[in-house]
Image 1 (cartoon, each protein chain N blue to C red):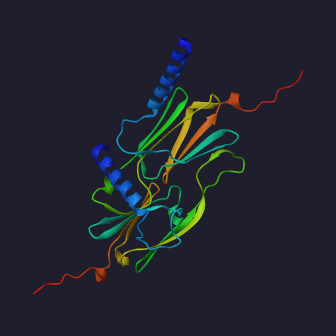
Image 2: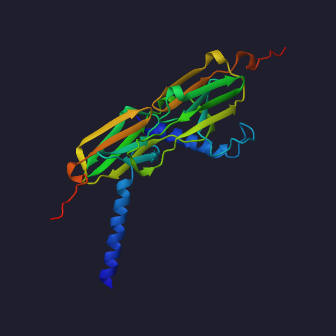
Length: 135
Length: 139
């Protein structure tokens, strides 16, 4: 009984830890960018809307098979502007994905164009479908 | 760099977003919620500044027109993937859009500055000289 309670507590703590990992220390709002993921024969293509993010303010990191995209927006054009009618809020963008082993992690191509980030993740040859001959 | 400034600004915008729900700045019409693209209007030294997020829209697919106090923003957002692609997740939407906004005053057509950069459209809409309030000297 007592053991069970301890187990449950650690579970909660683990969960809290996990959640805290997602917490950010940067001021301002963070949005989850809208993303498309499509796959073709040789690659996985991740397309993400990041309006207002400049190339130099975009960070893409791959660590322990987690692909992290962090885009910051420049607030300076909004200085001295007084909102009179608003429909959307502005903020930074962050999203992360777990990349499977089927992807060649050393070979990821990223292009930012018109506020859209396109990541091309090449599949490893091992992940390509193979026909297995029956003996 | 993004510290205090961003904090204060996004709170100000959020407050304005909430206020906009019961505000009929553009008068009651069919263009309520659920329109595309979302726009923000700012005031700067008596002029208006419009901002709209249009990621992935090509400049040549965008139409921007002003007639007196009506602004039209139309265009096409194309999202295409090859025939050989299979989809895992599709959150982005391709669509045709056409939005007209009635502004609170007439716009000086010649002074409009439009910029489209990183998927963000910014349009400076100067108030027409003829539409500016006249100051009356009280004798």
